[in-house]
Each structure stands twice: as structure tokens, then as C-alpha cells.
Length: 239
Image (cartoon, rainbow, N blue to C red; front, side):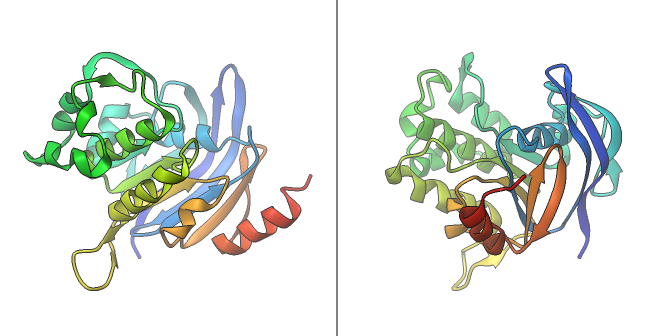
């Protein structure tokens, strides 16, 4: 398989302190990887570093995407290369309509017609995330990702803050980003993903090739995702 993302000895600061302390990770083309770990272990910071958000500062190491060093590229440049992120707590964006952003992110002139499939048809004229519930924010983020159609997905707890009525919709939309379901059998697209999960609910909808446990700013363990999840549920993360 072709290498999509390679992270080598990545160190990064956030909020004035070191969070990532030497992360090494490789994701192949078409692979889905899930990332477990206790709160504060650096999972969200890792995704932010890959996306290039200014909330973290890379101090050492490198991020290679499709053979190109993107360690110091801006967010917009990384997005154009094919990286997209679903944030856990995206900011309110006053003065920007959801529909305008979705149109700007997509090459599909009919993208707004898909909004109803996300239960977001009535939100297109609203400022992004302003007054949205947790489930509405998740559906909005997934609509934006669908419009962008990235080659590499970064999903930060897609099932968190989502009620039982919405979890099925969220799970199916994540699945549609990763799988081609136009034929009689679902086929994995050439799309890679790194997904943070605490509950493991997203694994009810998608397959995952590798699971990783992050602690103290490093990848500490790897294994089969469901085996890791079972062990975490039984024993926690340990010391």
C-alpha cells in the first residue's frame, strides 16, 4: 500500500506547555486508524498539528503527507492538498452562513441539495454553529467534509455529544466518506482516516485497520481496534 501520512518524532506545544513528546505514526492509503487515550493525553493536539491549526506549535519532528513535507504549511494549503478535519468543539463563526461555506468548499454545484440528507436544510442560512446543538454541530461538520471530499479525514470524537436519535445518522455519514456504497457491496475508498474515539461507538459503523493508544504525548500501544477497546473497557488505561 502507498503511504498517505508519516509522522516522525513529532513534538508540539499548546497553551504554553509541551503536549506532544515524540509521536511516530504512519497511515497508509485507504487505511482507517482509531486513536484511544485518556483525557489530556494529546490526541486532539495531534490532530490539530496534522491540520496545521495555530493552537499548537510544532517544535521538532516532521509531518509528511503524500510524500510532501507539510510540517510548516498553513491550514489552507493542507486543505487544498486533501486533508479535512471534523473538530470536537468547532468555534461559532458569526457573519458566515453555513450554505455559503459549503458551496465554497465544494466543486459540486448541487452540494446544497444534499443538506437535507444531513438534516441541515434549515440551517443553510444560519451563521455557522451559532445556537447549534451538539448533534447539529456534528452534522454540520460532516456536511462540510462531504463538500470538501478530502483524501485524509481527521475526526475528533464524531460520536461525542450526540444523542441516540442522531448517532445512527452520524455513523452512516462517516461511513459514506470512507466507503463507496453505490454497488451491491461496500468498497473502501482510497481515503485514509485517523479517528479519535472514547466510546468506540463509531466502530459499529466502520471497519478500522489499526488501533492506537496515546498516553503522555506519545503513541504507547498499537493493536486490533476492537481488542484494544475491550481491554480499555475492562482494565482502563493503567498507570
